[in-house]
Image (cartoon, rainbow, N blue to C red):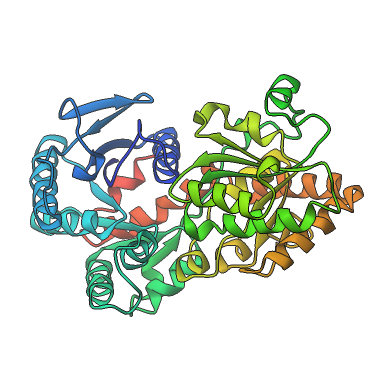
Length: 405
């Protein structure tokens, strides 16, 4: 079976989107399927019309700087049409956003190729998060209508979590057309219960300290301002406490100013962005990870990857009780949840974890077991088989899948 994936962006760029994509492609190839990969102009400038990254070939869609969204979709459709001629795929698999789904559906209908649309987040909610619109605005309503239009026209739909499945079905999409392919991790890539690197600990001034931490992008919805405030509330009770913030982003300067204002600037360590292959070394320094996401529509609907990575490593963590976290975390069994949007609740939850270290070994083991049992990429990607069978059946071509492993 030959699958042509249409992507917003890909490796060598690093993001949760590209890491999920790479895992999907690797596991699909392990199933014996042939995968081909096209990125849209959102990838940015590329030196050639095809580029290799991590052993995968990605076809690019060149576009002049400043190309508008409609023009980007037209360029994507033309590039995709040529690739359908050249590669003769059995199926087109378009991944979020809707700007990818619409060109795939135009080409797929014209060429008789079934289209699967993977909605990883809704376009309208992503725009709210980026600050380019507000919920309920005209642009928001138009974006939602366009997303719904693409969902109705797809032969099959996949999404990453139950929250988004519910949102899709609320748009009038039949339940049997939607399949959850959940986020997962490569458990074997994370060392369980690894000891911290003493040299890195000394370098960061963390010897003898109790370390709270966060690793990722510093977006507003991550709620890191609440984490700094929680640190200020905990400082008197735990004199050796420190906060390690691994990464960077739009909120970094605000967080630095806040730490100074709240009198904890000497307790907050900003590492800057760290190469992906080095991130685990920083995880290993942290006693309690914190994921204090704010309660907004995006975080209520979408599950993140970070708690799964923490579970795979056997790290202790506290997460806010937004819907995306509740879908992943079993309170008191694999991690801990606290009331979202409240620094006092976050501080109390962290203190409860720090004061009951006797619980840590059991929770660490349970968390790792959960990932190995329910959230590996091999298990998640195996679900595409039935999705693809249904999509191919719309063209009477399900026999294509019968020959694949």
